[in-house]
Amino acid sequence: MRNASKHVAGLRKRIARQLLCAALAAWPSIAAADSMKEAVAEDVRGLMPLYRDLHASPELSMKEVKTAAKLAVEVRKFGFKVTEKVGVTGVVAVMENGPGPVLLIRADMDGLPVVEQTGLPYSSKVKGVSATGIETSVMHACGHDTHMTAWIATAKRLAAMKAQWSGTLVMILQPGEETSEGARAMLADGLFSRFPKPQYALAFHDSASLPAGMIGYTSGPAAATVDSVDLVVKGVGGHGAVPHATKDPIVVAARIVSTLQTLISRELDPQDAAVVTVGSFQAGAKHNVIPDEAKLLLTVRTYNDKARELMLGGIARIARGEAIAAGLPEDKMPVMTVERDLSTPAAINTPEFTAHMAQVFAKRFGQDRVTPVPPPMVGEDFGRYRETDPSIQSLLFWVGGVPKTKWDAAGGDTMKLPSLHSPFWAPEAETVIATATEAMITATLDILKK
Ligand SMILES: [Zn+2]
Ligand SMILES: [Zn+2]
Image (spheres, rainbow, N blue to C red):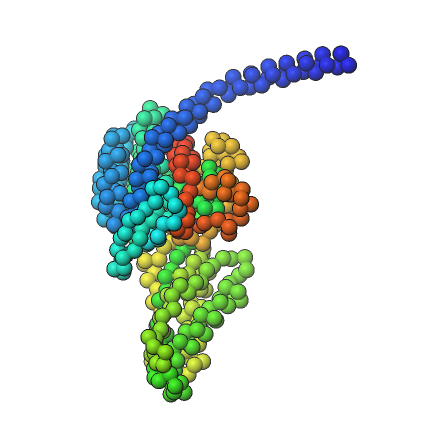
């Protein structure tokens, strides 16, 4: 017994010595990592009043005038060369810091027409007027306020760490992500010609599907191609009591809506993914009048050209087929409009670059905080930068925002939690901002390493 315990004590001492040696060997990198982490945590604590201010004063898409002006003042303080009103309200902050690649870091600025119901003390009470002229409440229901605060924190720290990287930073604040107008507007206003053109592009989005502080990534398509389809279904109107003398467009449109459901269940490869949602069905104005047209508004989401053509072609075919089945003449076939130029392209994460960044993040945060996630069917116009020049190495990653207690209470079931765009979406902002800032800095020090 005694001998055995002596042996155990000796073993313990040896293990302790080995652990100490290992810790000392790793000391410089741990020290560097921790000092950056601490500096970021302190910066972010100091920026929380700015976050709360941004949260309380959201602006609708392409109207981010005060938001942009406020943040331009902040980022100028760190020594960036700042240009405002690029693509209506966009901001471009450039820092040239020796030879090396050009890295674009993007945050989006717009709020949504949502009535906030989080109950937070800094809830938004702002009203705005939508593009269609309707007065509406406005809320940062997609968390773009966390993106902007992390963008400022990233700019501040990278300016302070100038001696540790070499290259050019192009940090942009983009308007109109929610309406898919902003990236297009900034590119059209010379983002890639008036300013250094990037070889790398990074953005993050807060996530309602990951616990706070987790990082999620998808290789390849990370946000879907989004097409908006308008469908006008024609008929022959008349008295509601004389249906046989009419061609009721409501019945034809209802059949179209039903038959559209077979596009995905019967025509799309089960291994592929797509969404066809009819978000609006408008027809008629009175109980006893059969109208002469019905209007459907659809959103179509796909990840590849084959599925996209199958869905768009299928909608046209089904609409026409149902009109023929109803006995409508050739001049009363449904009219389908898709503005392909206005479609949001899929956001493609460059596979090799994504794999490399996932490793860099795992090294920084630990493997348990970095996880691959399946591609969602949401749209993100961040994909437009890489679409303009496919040689750009691009990554859009997710930063979890669900408070741990809420995540645990829901047993990790996101169906029980508020989603992005919900009036109840209240991410654990400080964790999102600190994690995203640390991730952006880590990525930048890797991409623009000396
Ligand atoms: Zn959104
Ligand atoms: Zn968003």
